[in-house]
Image 1 (tube, one colour):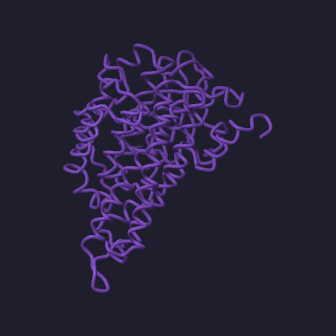
Image 2 (tube, rainbow, N blue to C red):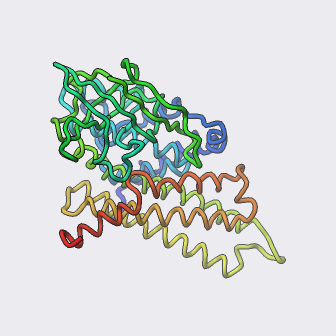
Image 3 (cartoon, one colour):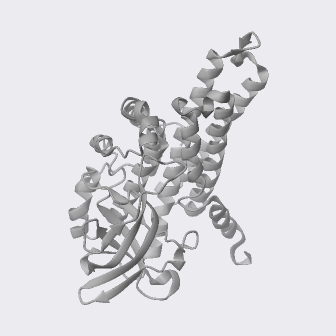
Length: 380
């Protein structure tokens, strides 16, 4: 676990080269313009990033969760926003691969893996965020179909994505009353809210998904009735690993930029890199990133193996890594002084992008709840 194979090192290097060539030079401008680079995503898919852990039979790469963490970290060196969307897209593809039937897999996975189709995950609602089991979107059976009505909030890729995995309520039996459905963008009754004005993640759209009596054939139900919450949570375990990896890539880019700046900038007659206080600070930042990476790899390996307690490890990694990486990026901005506050240097963008990682895929407060319940059991 502590030594990558030659194939894994080559994989990370290939993705890093891709990110530095095709993403990093444009990241600041894409952020400014709110541009979603679908053409670049499809080039990423040519390297296998559209279906990282999807079965090879349907066009996927058939890789592990640890491989995915390496890919997302390397991609995030170029732009955490783009890397994080790739994570979400892969969550959708994996859920269809894992829980879909043969017809669903054949219909959607080849195009999702090629990123000809883009995917979005629809769980959160205006009044159901951390309390996801309280969602109110309804799916009412009507013969061989379901009629879906409700609103999904904060949906990455919404309005551009072609395929939406939607969690909707088929009964009032709490979490056991939630069912997953595959909804297509162009179905009658599907519409989208305005692109949200956000602090970060501007290189991907975020909109409401509005469902108004959308007729979904029962053949597009994902899994059995009542299994949707379990499907949603299983998808989030991998999503938490990946969002942590995205934070790691962004923080790594910020630290590298800070080290370059300290070597080039002089003050009080000597390079900043010769000032012990700053030396100690970058040493602490590098140590925090290495510790975060080790916990991330540990959790990814546990998820790959289905090790007992892997959901708690995924929660630990998500909480620890996203907190540590935001702190490193923020310190990197401080080390740049006033230049770190300027958009053209790209550091303030990384800080803005990483901030939301402490909120999505389950807030870090919810991660603490998952961890504490695993320790305390019914006493909690």
